[in-house]
Length: 85
Image (cartoon, rainbow, N blue to C red; front, side):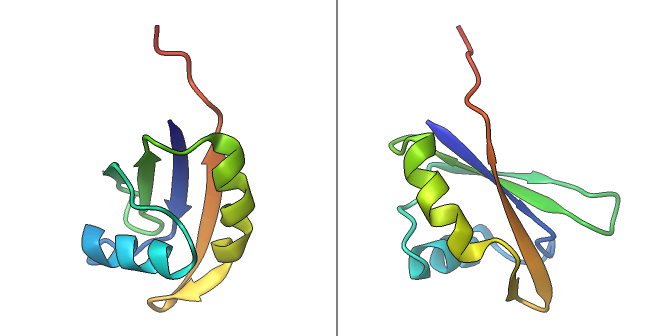
């Protein structure tokens, strides 16, 4: 499992639009999206990929980090793997 934090994503953007955006840049389909309100100014979306390693996402991350999309500059940060045992 790997998690990608997309920062500065407009709250009105749907999960389907995020999925289409990521697939356009070579990402696999996500397993889940969790919305993180940013106090109104910089909302984010935590995109979870169950069948992808962190190393696999690291290669793709640079394709979208600081990309201008939907009238905002998107940040893409790979979150460290968590041990949930």
